[in-house]
Image (cartoon, rainbow, N blue to C red; front, side):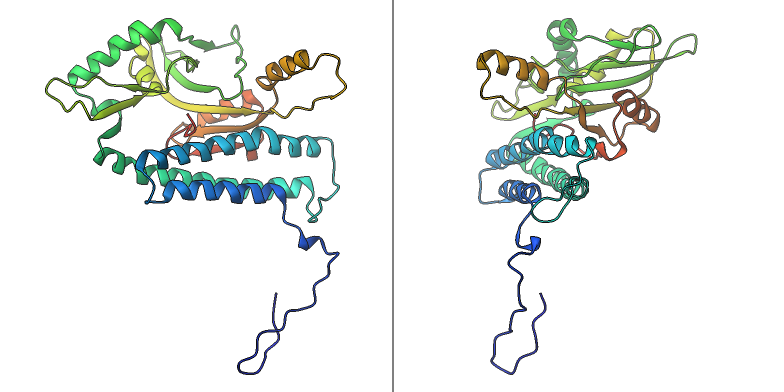
Length: 315
């Protein structure tokens, strides 16, 4: 709003405002994203305890997932049905989606910067999240033993070939994608969904003579990848990456339904199998695997997001 020049000591005179203009409204979806930015700001607040800041970061990421699964899914449905009726603030569903994706990408980038800022602070406070290369020989042996005992029995490798089509990936599914070369030179693509009943981060045992107050963790996907030879003996890893899938979880309940319990049971099951709304992929995933994932999940380009950093901050 531009103000007319005034004399010294006078307040600027506001321009006339049309009380019927759609500009008097704020888009509710963009307003929600602004609210979630405030949640993230709590993770950046150095006056909070360190683990509380990590919790706020996780809440912010979880909120964003739920936002896409419900609110964005509703808008996507309107676009699919060619609805062009503008909202109160004058934006069509397609225009709202474009603005949402822009703001959400910025929010995700700030979440990753927040994690990179918190990680060294956690390490200084005695909580470390390690890579495979940072493990000692004893810790590497423990990781392999833990994999063979508790992870190997519940991991289901899925080969991708004409006899084994691309499997269904449920909502919030976290999957490793692999491209491997056999001894005869043939290439095999495969998927490894992360087991949902195993914690995302495994706590490493305290080394002999080490400080028992120091907590050392390693991500489940790194453990599985380091032991991939047990799942695919005789294969050489050519390329690998990871991705997460968000699906349409928007539900509509008919209040006049005869059995609301049965209706909700059906809706909860349907939440796992909705249309793909967003696919988050590790930025280190090679383009060939990216193209395979995008094609098989039938994801639109605007729904396919590369994440530079830790995938699945909400987990």
